[in-house]
Amino acid sequence: MTSENLSPEQNVYMASCLCRYRRRILCCCSPCILLLPVYLYVTIALFFAIKYSTPKVSVLPLRFVASGLKHSSDLAPHPKKSFWRTELESGALWNFIQHVTDRQNNPILRPGLANSAHVSSNLATGKGTGCSPDSAIISKIPDYSTLPTQMKNFVATMHCRDYPLIIAPKDVCNHGPLAKIQAPMLLMAIKTQTANFENREAIRQTWGRTGMVKGQGRQGLVRRVFLLGKTEDLRTEKELQLEANKYADIIQWDFMDTFFNLTLKDVLFWDWFSRLCPHAHFIFKGDDDVFVRMPAVLDYLLKEKEKADERHLKESTETNEMEGFVVGDIINNAMPIRSNEAKYYIPESFYKGLYPSYPGGGGVVYSGSLAHRLLEVSQWVHLFPIDDVYLGMCLKRLGVYPINHPAFLTFDFPKEESKDPCANHTILLVHKRSPAEMFRLWIETSTPSSRCRNASLRS
Ligand SMILES: *[C@@H]1O[C@H](CO)[C@@H](O)[C@H](O)[C@H]1NC(C)=O
Ligand SMILES: *[C@@H]1O[C@H](CO)[C@@H](O)[C@H](O)[C@H]1NC(C)=O
Ligand SMILES: *[C@@H]1O[C@H](CO)[C@@H](O)[C@H](O)[C@H]1NC(C)=O
Image 1: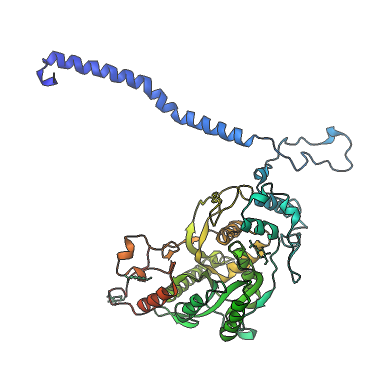
Image 2: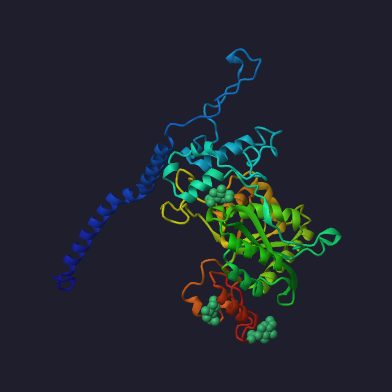
């Protein structure tokens, strides 16, 4: 029976009947819907209350009793609980030792101590003598024996960071009275390993050329260094020595060049930079399997610098905003990888929490003045096995927000876009590219077809 066959009265009756039911349904359900957020809130609140109410180890005494006070009635009322969190992230090693360091160096609690007891001086350092594994720290991580070898090695030597130089480059930057005037606009610091001869050669001949590099109209002085640790293969090490003599662009330090030792390249490079090329305006730090459109990078940087200098003059602010300039492919809200076969595996017993925002390690550019600040702050931050995350941790401490630029493609093109005939002309950096591809890209991007000549950067 359809409603067309009904008399008007029946139709009205059915309508009001339906209405009644609808009203009743609404009556029953709307409170449920309104209360849903409240239920959700209560559930989440309960979850957190339970999660964080597990027994706490209170490290600080609850009250401070000044000497000379005899009667407890003389004491001012004090809060029962400290207002900072004392649970020390329930036993993750990095969180724990960082917490201890932060407390030791808290400038409010200990005004005189700040600047004296940083992470590499209150722990043994590896200066000159090599660095012996720390057995005390091993006992602080309960599942040490079950960890993958690279994690074990990292934990045992994470207190060492002053490794001496084996090979030092010559005259990368000018010294003497003209050091400042003739400072490079951009210093390239490229992470590489001894065996990657081909990559270094391709970089030298393509995007990593040094000297004056011309963008569209502007130009800037570019310098280059490669960052290396050592390997146990004496034959290739010897070849590296020859290569270093030839090009004078190799920095090698006396530590094993492993994946989890990459962070050492950051902190040791900052140290080298602050002593031997302190006036460079910008630093590019990246992998040896990327392609960089260097003239476009220079254009972009010079524009940013000009804008910042103008604002600095106009607003006569004390600091130039370039002191906090860092740009790349920014990764936000990343979580540690917990599957123990992965290259990036970080166990819960080592680190808990999200990672701070960080620029992908394939390639990042920051200002020279920021590099000086990074060197400083890194002395208060314990080493972390993943180098780009460590950079994020240091930036966070400085209160610096990295700038995301879509033309930094540390994960290559999205599939559709790679078909665009001008795609290669819209990037500043792309990962990952073989030496042969670097040559092809170099030729393609330095002699663009008229169609692609004006292609604008990915945005
Ligand atoms: C880092 O290098 C040091 C010094 O060569 C070495 O003892 C340590 O095992 C290395 N760490 C990793 C994670 O490979
Ligand atoms: C862009 O460069 C890659 C090499 O990395 C090349 O295979 C590709 O064909 C280029 N794209 C265009 C549209 O030329
Ligand atoms: C590219 O840009 C320049 C100036 O911005 C303009 O003169 C020229 O006509 C443009 N070329 C093409 C192919 O669009």
